[in-house]
Length: 411
Image (cartoon, rainbow, N blue to C red; front, side, top):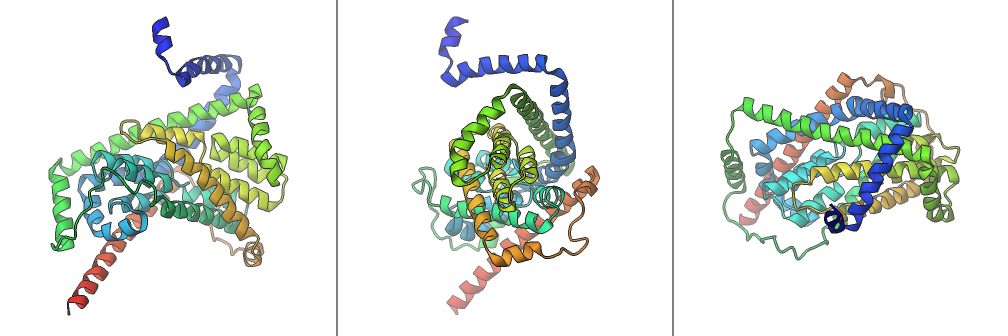
């Protein structure tokens, strides 16, 4: 027993007493822990579950039938120059920018397992496709928290633009990838090669539709249960941290860096909450008695960071691969800074301020409370369908443009 403890690394030795203290706090504050657990289960069932289920199931089906392999061949000429990634990564981008975390990490891990990308490519891919849910930013934040759908759209725009800029910069990371094999220009028709890859992918694991659908549902539910467990645990951790005074210490530590930059104390408090979980952090930012520009900037930074809860979820999604978390954590910090800077620059523009101040037409976005469980499921199902159709249309358009250019060159 003693020798086993000696073999533990320093983080391992710290985890054991931390778990002990956490269990003790659960015994000391049972009522608060129960309420926090209920809040976590509510958030998972009513927000996360209906939002991610359609994307998880559809991605499993598209990968199983080889559609991702097919589109990957068609989009290789686009993805490689822009992001230095394989064409199959385009599917992760399409899903990552229309769903919510940690779907993109799960898909990047799946591409890595199927050997559709190298380790460094998968790590870069999940770094800039990790986005907050559009429904959360536009409805929950814009309408529910700020009562201004246009501000929600601005925050979402800064969020997506910051991640996209990060993706363009990441193309220069690990350019000397030892796993990458440069493919010479193949004279074979690109469409035929794409069809051949799709057939090869399906034949590697042929299953009837019923079996494939059942496997997709089972895999998706298991992933969502893992995500739900993390949400509940971190909901309790945040509550215990607030009751024990740990959150106050974290707030002071963040204030040492944030206050000299002009952030007020209430803004710093929201950033400390957002360090753990985005919903509580963005809610605290919206309710803070500070100027609107500080509220919006802190909200953008919290969404960009995504919270330790999401980092833990991503870690679980890639746990059975050789992907590492180091670059992902660094990119979350950089995304937080980029999103905050973009929000600051936009809110210093007179045209943007005038647009935000102008009245919004009725019915532009539904009220935040109008999205029931079924309404959220239907909304994200349609969004998933539109994302897949747009992805396919983009791939086919790129193929036809490339084919037309080749024919015109030959003529």
